[in-house]
Length: 529
Image (cartoon, rainbow, N blue to C red; front, side, top):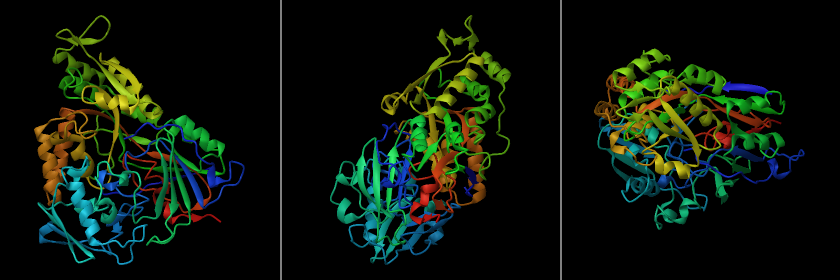
């Protein structure tokens, strides 16, 4: 097997699913009938919805839709539905886009500027249940000028706004007559993208066919199936049996394909981190001394080496150590002596059983991880082992997301987050107090005025030096009072049948497998022979 390590350059929830029962690659069975025109991919999770109005595809790479802009393999912005990058005027408060004149939705209706206006207005409507609407906080007004121009007016200059316009555009003539929260568009979408949804069996698979009239050219891969297989081992087994063409896999399972000459492994760097949320309202996990001690007790380097088999980096905060915005000198080695000293000083005294207590309350809390996710399980167990060395008892439990979600405000969770493009994209929703407990936003209910101020400065600032200073302050505040214990940034591994040429990966966000992986641009794939 050939292994490719492809690193994109960047200036910058996993859900449980049932085992899928879908056709073998190429619909020809596992006995050699596979075709380069049909692809079956195994991924660990599926979206809640296929409507961009509720957040689907907001970071790009939707197969059904397109945004005004898109990203290339090196994460540079490029025109998509727009003819060119936006014209920026009024000191960064006005963005003007001119639309392509050859774009139609898959039902044959032409794309117009009114569709773009409808999309953004609906996302921003307070009645729309889109938990990501804070990402468009800067937008004051969006209007159409004729059929082919869209003008965004911002309340304040937002340096990263252009990257927000990878948001997919939906057809007003279909979605406009529906409730965006409950309408059929959520499961039966119509877009301008390279593929058309042909079926969605929840928890099992999504199937797509190529859009022959796609403005970017008809894809060579004519049928695409995304098989939803939550269990890592099952995904690997089905890939090995020939039931899948490719799959997202954890490092230990990807390594089992190293001698398979018919498959290639692709390794993508990412902003995807694993962390333990420490809810502010939990009497133990919300204690600053406990948080600081846990931050020092964990052995991040061993987690990378043993759990990720070297496919990742220690995480000292939400930004990777090789990110341009990463603050210097915040790396922290494991220091059990210092961790114990912090607890001693705060009054957490060691009992006969080795577990600390304060005012009669033991230093004990529960940590949940999603069942079937071996990487998170291993992180959780290693975290609990390290915590116990400092006298903190972490009870690890697995559960489905349906069980975990109601508990997130009170119990710790082995969580995964991370966004590419600009530090504002991932940090604001992770940490700003205004979003505390808003679904998966600010799961820890973190409330730190200094961090809020830094986030607001980073979002609204135009001077790169001011923004850099703000994010530097934020990262140092997280050392003083970490609402999360950041553990590792993980590289994403994918194993794929060797039937296509010149495949690439991008630097990826937390979400991977469905919209990322070597199939991020499957519409551009060419057969190897």
